[in-house]
Image (tube, rainbow, N blue to C red; front, side):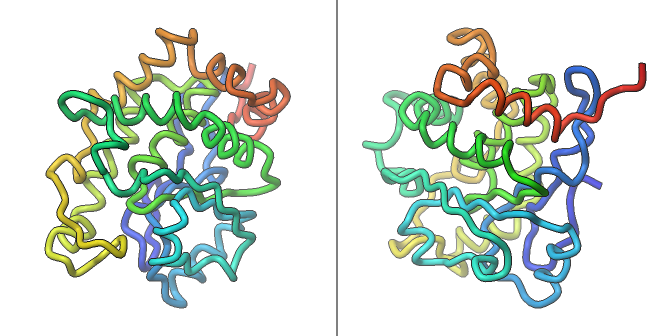
Length: 244
C-alpha cells in the first residue's frame, strides 16, 4: 500500500511498486513524509514496525528548532539541511519572473547540488529502510524522491504522479497552515496559494531539466559527486529484478 496509515502523519508513503529499469522498485526501502513532529505512541510504534534504519531530516535549522522531529531520539537521525531560507519563500530565494515550482526545484538542483548529493548518497548507502522528510513532504522531499526514482529508471510520468499525491493527502495540514492553527516557522504564515500546490506539469518540467542539461538524472548525480558505486548500490537496494 503506497500511503501508510501512521497516526500523526497524513503524507507518509512508500516509493515501492513503480516500474523501473530491469524490474520494479521494492516496497519497504524508502518512505517519504511530512515532518514527524506530532507523533504519539501509536505513530512511533507503527514506524518501529517498518524496521527503519534511519530518518533523514531535510529541513533547515530554523524549522527544526521550531518544530523538532519526534523521531530524533527514537531512530538514528540524520540532518541534511537545505538552508539559505528555502522554507521562507522570500523573493531573494525564488527564481525571477512568474512563480512556478519547476523553476524553484531547478534552482535548488543547481545551487544546492551538494545537498542533493548528500541526501541521495545517504539513502543509497543506508543498511535498511529510510524515512526522509521536510516540512510538508512535498518540495524538498519531492526533489530527493525524483532523484531516487529517476536514478533507477522510473518513468517521468510516474515520478510526477507520485509528487502530485502530496496535494491530495495534505489538505488537513494545509488548512491548519492557512488558519494559523499550525505554524511551521517562528514568523507568521502568510502563504501564497502556490504553497499548497503540486502541479503535475511542474514535476515533468523538473525531470526534463535533467534530461535537457545533463542527459538524465543518473548523469546529473554523477556530475554533482555521487559515486558510480553508490548508484549501483541504490539500484541493488531499490530495484527488484524481473525474473528472466
